[in-house]
Length: 105
Length: 456
Image 1 (cartoon, each protein chain N blue to C red):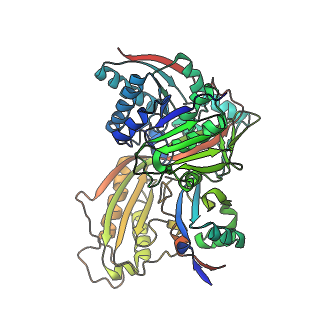
Image 2 (image 1 turned 90 degrees about the vertical axis):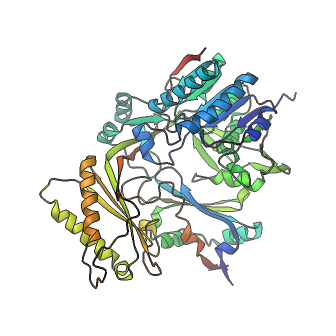
């Protein structure tokens, strides 16, 4: 069964974690969905690297955080916050590719 | 024996972001031991630290401080500001001090104020660099001596220790330079003997005030209480609630690992943390641990100037042009390069194309104009001085305006400008140049405390 990430989550957001990293928070609506997706390892390094067209080595971490029913993904920023050619100083608008995510669990 | 809970009022997420008076008064009515606010962030980017300018507005900061200081003075409790002036360099701290002096004078108050400096001198840092005591944090590049020299303001994030020292004289106000976000809330309970891990974790939540409640807000108050083996958070506006989810979710915010939160002198460990819904709007947290590091380490932040910026804002509604935006941009860049090739001009020229990849640039999965009936365009030139940036921006703008692309029908002009003048000077441009750790420091003496009396 194909599942849309937006159907089973309340929050999908991005933000700076310091000037050199971007961090994404994906918070699920229910414990059941959180556990199913976390257990199936849907949000993995290869998927994030593919979605953002970055090397897998730039995906710095994917952490499950039970108290918030959340999966947290952190990547290296291609350009540091506010550096020349950069487009999102706060990093708050880099989440959109996750909104379109559809997968099977 | 149960002792009295320690009570903290956090009026707002960042000094100058404001708060409803009713929430603040509800907080004061609970007889807090402390009013504290975090003033800073690196989020607004490198300019503010590098240029020594606050990202918050002076009038708005004065309004918040006026209410907080009068409230604190009336109840005989201190007001502590962390990362004063936004970035915590000397220029920011002095800016904040001047506002406090103005309030003292206008309100007829005599204020004992402790100022804690966090700006570091370059010779000391150069020596630390030579001794291998400065290392990059995460993906930051390693520090070169040239970079250190070019950096204007360098600050270190203080831990709770300098604030605990300053609390010794029982000041009315503490203005701390760059400080680890939680410590303006945590220093006083730690000094009073409450658990440092719980005090710091509470500070982590209170530093964004009502953002950790639902509906969240960056401009409303939160209240925290610390007991022997727990702390509690609750909003002061009846329209908001703290839920286990809103509080736990905030623990994720702006950090890469929610279980391990590194700070000056050690890591907060949240692996055994429990978030319990105590009442409809109050969450109780327990189980936080603190793992002190073997050697005391602080985070350094710095920014250096990279030139001056001029931008021009425009749009296009022409589908023939939109389809060819990439070759048009390339053609304009070539024309600019050719025109100034003998002028010995070092510049960068960026085109932000909204409707294609203006927001995500290289991370954009679909960098196409398909489906865009109009494009927003920002032409951005940076150069070693403002005049040169103006020149490059103006030339790129006029070239793009009349650029003859393939199949063009609209020969009167390619761009719609919303403004006259079309170009804007952005002033000095900075980039982050230090985001490093400084190892083996004395947590107190690195941050000198100065005591002054303001007003009276």
